[in-house]
Image 1 (cartoon, each protein chain N blue to C red):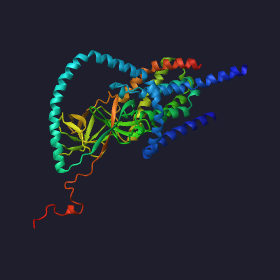
Image 2: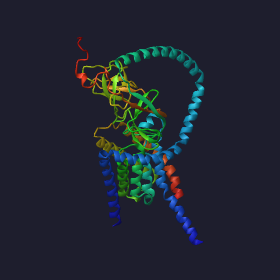
Image 3: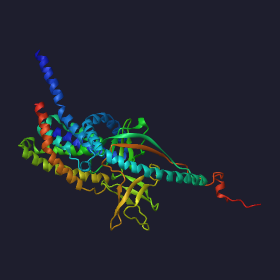
Image 4: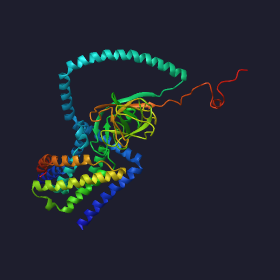
Length: 170
Length: 287
C-alpha cells in the first residue's frame, strides 16, 4: 500500500517536473503564431527568455542546461533563425543567472524584475551582435529595442502565469 | 567538484551551439533536412495551439464582412462592369499577342499552381522574415518554388518537408529576386533588408526611376515567372537608394499559393535551321 502511494507520488512528480520544459515550449509556440499584427510581427517579445529566467531562478533543478539547449534548438527550427543561435543565447543567459547565485536572485518581485531588465538588455544586445556577425551585416537594432521594451512589459503577466504552475509543482 | 562538472557541461553546450552555427553555414542542405523533419512534427501542435486565435480572427472577419456587405455589393457591381469591358479588350490583345508570338516562334514558360496553403507560423523576429506553410513534398512542393497570392509575390520555398515548407519572405535580408521596371523593362535585383520596404540593387547608372514606378518579376533565374507584380517605388534617397513597397501586405497573410515555373526552351527564330546551319546565311541567293 505504502509502496503504491510512494510510486504514485514519484509518477506525479515525474509529470510535474516536465512542466517547466512544457511551459517554455508553449511560449516558443506562442512566439511563432501568425498574429498578422504589423507591430507584433517585428517586435515579438522574447517570451522564451522570461520562461528560462523564471525557471532558472525558482526551479533550476528542473531546467538543466541540456533542456535549455534543446529548447533553444527547437526555437531555432520554428523561428527559422540560424541553427544554434537561440540555444547559444539561452544557455549563456542561464549560466549568467547561475553565476549570479540563486539566493541573490530569489528576492521580491520588483527586484527580480529589475534584474530581468538588465538580463533582457544584455540578451537583446547579444542576439543583435551574434546575428549581425552570422550574416556579416550591420543589422538594424531599432526593432530589438522594441522587443526589449515589450519583453519587460510582458514579464509580470508571464511570471504570474508561471507562478501558478510553480505552485502546482510544489 | 560538482560546480566544476556543471561548468564543464555548460561550456560543452555553448561550444556545441557555436559548432552548430558554424557547421550550419557550410552544410546548409544537411541542416535543412534535419530542420524540415523536426518542424514537420510540430505543425499539428502549432495548429492546435492556434485554434483560439483562428476562431477569434474568423469571428471578427465575419462581423466586419456583415457590416460592409451592402457597400461592398454596390462597389463590386461597378467593378464587375468595368472588368467586363477590360476583359473584352484583354482578349483582343491576347489574340494579337499569340499571333505575333507564333510569327516569331517565341516559346513561353509554363506556370502551374502546385497547391494553396495556409500559413501555420511566422518568424515574428526583426532579424528573420520567413513563415511555415502546411504544404510540402507530399503536395508536390519543391525547394525554390515561388509563393504568391492574388496581389503578387510573397517569397520562395527554402526548406521543404513532407507536409510543410518554410518560405523565405521578400523582405528577408537574404532575399534577392530578379525584377524589372514595368515601364522601361530595366532589369535589376530586388533585395530585402528585414524592414517593411525593399530596395533595388544593381540599377544601371544611366537609368532613372521615379516614385510610383511598378516593379514586376523579370523571370530571370527561373524561379519566378515573368510579369508578376512585386511592388511600387515609393522613395528615392538623395544617395540614389530606391525603396520599393511590396504589392503584398506581408503582415496580413493567411493563405498563399505555391506555383511552379517551367522555363521555356531558348526561343528559336527559324526552327527549320539546324544548329550548324545557323552560322550560314539564312537567306539563300537566287540561282
